[in-house]
Image (cartoon, rainbow, N blue to C red; front, side):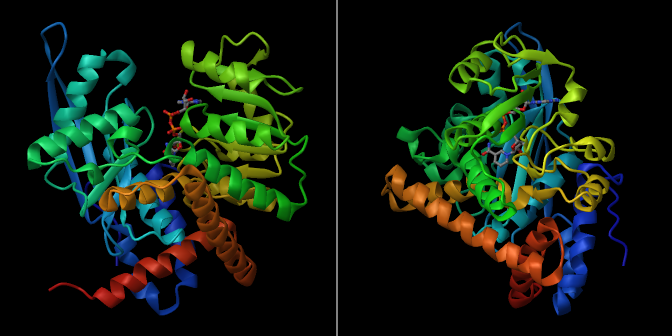
Length: 424
Ligand code: NAD
């Protein structure tokens, strides 16, 4: 049976093409459930919406918005909202599919979804940003809801945008519905620990992987691409554990300091100066040189498709921790595996965010909020249990951690599919 869809034409290394290749690799390990594998290659539902707003100068601008629900066999859809000029249907499909795998890998009672608007938010005023967010939320309001599909922040979206989304949805349904989105401000049903959760998960899985490799974190050299929510928090936690953050790259450029960058000054500098490039206590290097820098741990925490075959050949790290979604293309994955570089894949490495989003959603329903220690203890336990199970699966079948994560997750997803049966 062909799994070609008429509405996207993926290439081998494009996001959906990457995801399809990851599914193909896991099918041999699914036993009788392989019969249901085609369901993983077809999003359940994809909504494309027009988002028109009146700009501050009185003109009318139209933006393209998406919400894709990839698979809802295990529960309501869950996945972030991205505001970026390159957002397109294929990318949102892949990101939604990785959410299906991720929520199953850490055994949360969710399916996978993702959304986004094709817009450069840096070119909008705050007023225009609010209008885009509210109109988009209203347009996708026909498929989202606390029991059906729960968005969260992703690239270029934050707690304020989640507050506008929650308010817009609540106005439309006629009652405050805090559970419709996660990643909200604390006083609007947000959860302690959510802002740092993804970076914390990257650190917890990375620390365990390093331990198993015999790599001492004290003095370990770490390079980070992407210095936003995920990358900066992960960097801070590695630095606290004694590692040296020797390089940071973001959209503005790449800075290095082999003695270790001072994060206490770099983090506020990046926030206040639109990126790291102008940071003085470091050397500026060419962006491409980032990929062959001497380091022990590499954390891609920006966008998809960053570790290409060429970069995989020169990369010097022993350990790659995928904070971003889909940063490694399949051909590069093979090269890293042949070179003995261990990759902790996105679908487990960055699952900390959705795990604390789950805690937030549970707290919203019970209107009873936990303290931060309780959240972090529960988060660390879920991440460690999931990673250990994945590691055992990888050892048993002699497969990469990525294929092992897909094996654990896809078994749960397809078992749910099988047990529910096909409707009608
Ligand atoms: P963010 O918007 O806070 O930060 C993104 C960072 O990437 C910024 O530092 C930006 O400068 C950098 N960047 C953008 N384009 C770049 C380029 N071409 N080269 C180098 N750097 C570039 O976003 P975030 O929430 O930190 O998300 C980063 C990644 O982590 C994304 O892949 C996202 O899907 C993934 N992720 C995020 C969460 C979360 O909870 N926020 C959870 C899971 C996965």
